[in-house]
Length: 361
Image (cartoon, rainbow, N blue to C red):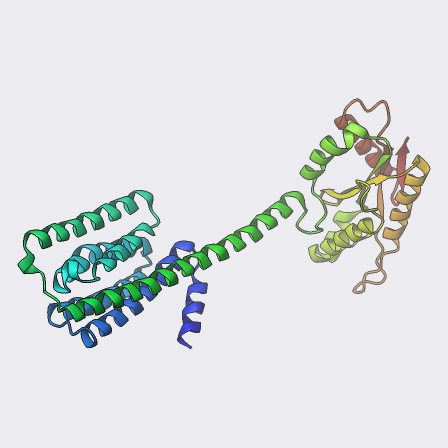
């Protein structure tokens, strides 16, 4: 139950910094509590060592409360590292046996926690502070050996063994936790990148290719070798009136159904594509062996669209009008010229009525 709640709490954190902070804090509180119990019960340390051990647990809990209430994650992490590496671990080094004990492993753990701080400059400052504080403790322990609590040989062995055991588990759990966070973040990032890549090329409503992708596709893939390609630009007739009369939601559905009809006549694997060019304007790029074959497919698409049935409005019919050209036309000295002619044919079809195509071979 506790583990599930911790997982849910960490999953609810929005940023990597928050997940990292709370994961390390919760783990540190548990590790400090277990270490405190083991030190007092099994190793027999008391007095100042016991007080310091209790303080470490209380201090981490207080830091967590402050971070929860203020949201100042970075500042709380910095403060926790300073207190641990300056005011707790060095005194514990003297009280728990100095060089004759395994307390020095805790000092390494303190530096490891400093190294996980997210700000580059402050991280460097934290590590320097931790190293200096521990080096000062080592120097004083060597200079004033009477300040160090002496351990019995059996107790010293137990202390080394227990410290190594706890630190090994702590390092494994900590690194595994970090790798899990980064792996999850990487997975979420990869999904986000795929979505961004998709919507950089696609229209969010119809999921067709968008205009910017099509212009690039036309320039890189079609224009160098235009033979066999034909282009149809069409738009929904009287679309503004449709939206005014039936609403934007129904207008969006009309566009999606038109897009689906265009996709249905596309041949996959031949370089064909369907594009939402602008608003109710679409472009169908067709590959065929002849002009007549391509025109037949374009006319079939126009008829298919006119036969669309909408369940909520069975009496409603949608039609499209547009222009149709062969991409290999020698008068198209540039792709912009080709698109300009296609626009003219499209406008001509609109001016002549609706539900028709104007052509140029």
